[in-house]
Amino acid sequence: MATSVTESTDADVELRIPADSAFVSVLRSTAAGLASRLDFDLSTIEDLRIAVGEACALALPEADEGSSMTAEFYLSSRHLTVSVSVTGTELQPPDQESFAWQVLDTLASGASAEIASGRLAIVLSVGDEPVVD
Image (tube, rainbow, N blue to C red):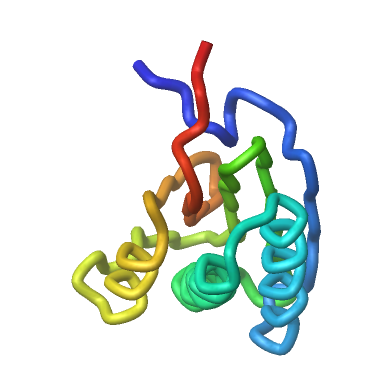
């Protein structure tokens, strides 16, 4: 069984914000800043900003009221993986036919949803695939 990126290593950057759409811009800006540090081109950075927003749009409705949303960023030389997660009592996987999922899947080089231990994580990747030793 393959180990997901969120299970295998500690995040390079981790942010916790209130699970409220008013704070999504913080995650979008953080993602853009990190992608810029990795020398991603402007088009990829903008795609990433939009993809992170869509990941949040998919996760936020599942969050318990008053809870937090966590974003973990995993960086390599030309690759960035972002995991946006929330806790909830009755978590449902996102509808992969929804407009938000279709946008996310189109803009990211990879996208998945994971539910474990009362937590929904939307994971997306952009950039060149990381080299696995």
